[in-house]
Image (cartoon, rainbow, N blue to C red; front, side, top):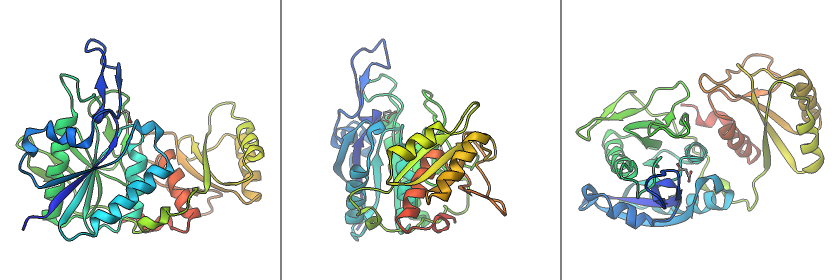
Length: 321
Ligand code: SIN
């Protein structure tokens, strides 16, 4: 018997509806149910699917409790023998955070494919139906190839949950891999073409890693011209529960001197300080003698989650594959 695919809905522009067709940006995200999204794709009729609404948000409002609900639903669905894998519909704005988080938690036994859209479902040129169909195709293909793990399908490309990030504010092909290649591409006939031999190994930290009601506090600061450390000192004064800070550093992980001094003070006070880069591609490669941990190719928002997981006992190198 063919195993079925579960589609979990969380909201986003893919589920958005517009007010004014002449002004494409006039819409509300997270209006349509995941059942409605599936019903709008004729090619999904007859595909063994089951839908489940986990949340209904504009993903700028993503938060720990929604991630907890998502982790519970994934744990529940992925352990079932009759489930081939899970597709998640999501907003694009924090897609890279959810994808990275799930990549670190998942054991990689089955494919989990996230998808989204840059245009609301009511737009005449909506990209959501095609992306949703491609996500289901990519999941079936991954299952057949024996690929487990977390991937994102957008605009005909399949990106790893480890590397994916939003790289354009309004283009339909808004995502890239920060310098890493796509895992696969969806051909015009709907078949998948592999671009790499293996998917990055999932972190395997476990869904229950999110069981804590409140996550450890980790904040992001940016290094920029004139950064004088006031943000860091104010943060430290306002948040005594601070566990970590991620610096979105300049270039290959450099930090403006006064900010650097403030961060040293923070680290001496027991707060962990990690570095990512403001630059879109390439990341910060760790080097011997680094004063602050470098998080390779993660965006600052992903690095924040890496540090949250670190504070919860999950080690960064679990996710390198
Ligand atoms: C969202 O992230 O939920 C809104 C924007 C989008 O999906 O493109």
